[in-house]
Amino acid sequence: MKTKLADRSDAALIHDLMIKAFVEYNDAEPPSSALEETVESIATALKDDEQSLISYVDGEAVGMVRFRLKENAVYFYRLSVIPEKQGQGIAKKILRSLEDYAKQNSIPTMLCKVRMNVSKNIKLYSSMGYSIYDEEVINKPNGTSIKVVSMVKQL
Image (cartoon, rainbow, N blue to C red; front, side, top):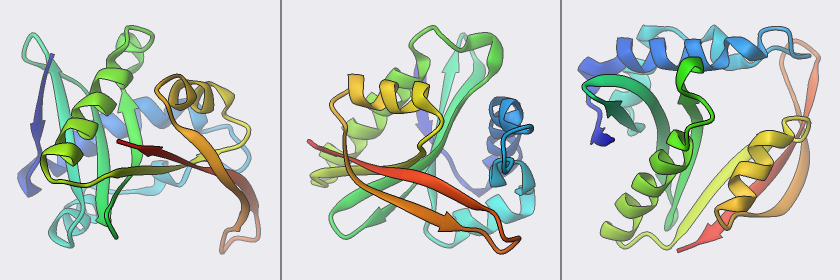
């Protein structure tokens, strides 16, 4: 697997990978806000200090993660692996690549937020050395609320 740092021209690919991976949360209550994002909103985010890693297997884009640098930490989100490649360890490899990027840039901490009811993601991050350090309820503008945990890993 090869992983590369994305640029703004990759916004459509990032969007495509994310939508394919997050469609499983379409019926979640509430549905993931990832499904509301557009190519344009991602391109704007990439212009405004967001970054992304895209991973390829045999030349085919199979996953990505978006992230921002925050106060000596990498805060990552929208980790995505296309459905037909899930369960093959790709998400872990993408995270390891992101951790390597953090280490190369002398960033000691990895952070993420995970919906409490998505236990498979909490298990994935826990298996890689992340631990829960906070719980909160995020109130969305449409009146719904989501329980999330914040997770951290020191590199």
